Length: 224
Picture 1 (cartoon, helix red, strand yellow):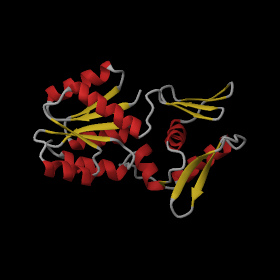
Picture 2 (cartoon, rainbow, N blue to C red; picture 1 turned 45 degrees about the vertical axis):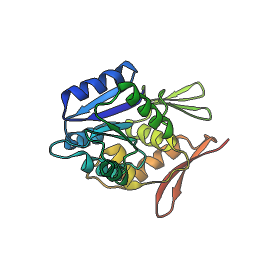
Picture 3 (cartoon, one colour; picture 1 turned 90 degrees about the vertical axis):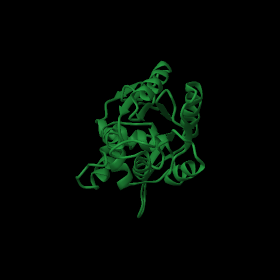
């Protein structure tokens, strides 16, 4: 199941939100402010973020901006205590996808979460099929026909990221931030090394190919 990050300094709200999400089978990560939320996002795979506007240290506005800069494909659901029009407009301008005004009905929240995951084509099974290749992010297994392939973690995450959005171009910077984390201080060319290894591993696989988009980055193309 997808992993959802809940960022809110109100422990009661976090408990309520997490209860309903867990009951529906989602994996959960919790943060009490924007700074902690960014650290969690940098350290693990996050599929959707539910964030409150009014938080200490780093508020929801700043968090939304940083998350959207790091990942244009990350679903963001904002929570607000007032629900004023200007707040919603500002949130959408910063990259929020949807809004909920406190107090809210947890069932409505779940409906909005599932709608966002569907909109972004994030499957709840976390399994991607590329011809005879199966990628399972829950077990980090790659199966080719009857053959089980064990990829290093970063190679798997890189391939899964590209395969989740076929045809989408990702820059080296985006891939570094989303897979290695925003605090990564190594060379961006590490992406090129991992791409080269993936191409070598799947050189005889006709169903997909990782293409270089000159001056931009990489994308995965699927072939029937």
